[in-house]
Length: 147
Image 1: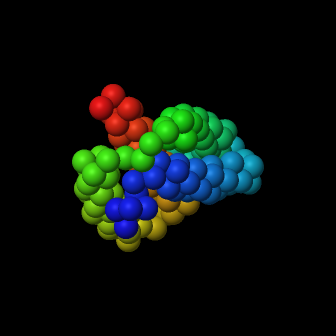
Image 2: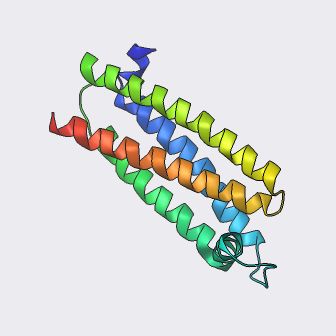
Image 3: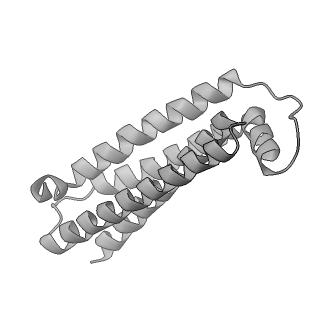
């Protein structure tokens, strides 16, 4: 596993594939939504209105921009990561997996407490989760370039 992670192209492929999938979801979902009156008020009504009025595309393009910058920096790296950077990446992936499991539990709890606006809750989960992963990976790549 560590041998595979030593290659920057592996990291670039992972970020690129998942970002393309999530961007496709946000762009496709945004094309299906129409802005309209939202029942109730509060955060979920505002979030739903934001998504319906084109916010899905904004999220998708922001994720694509961060991923493109990360992939470009990864693919211009001429040598594989050393053992220190690979061990650090493995630790970051382990922490990300634990945090993802905690976020999934919180997401399911939100659905069980209030089953309304499931699509909006799922969109928020994806946006927060993948933006965090993409920005953390960008920070990792920038930090590895300086050392």
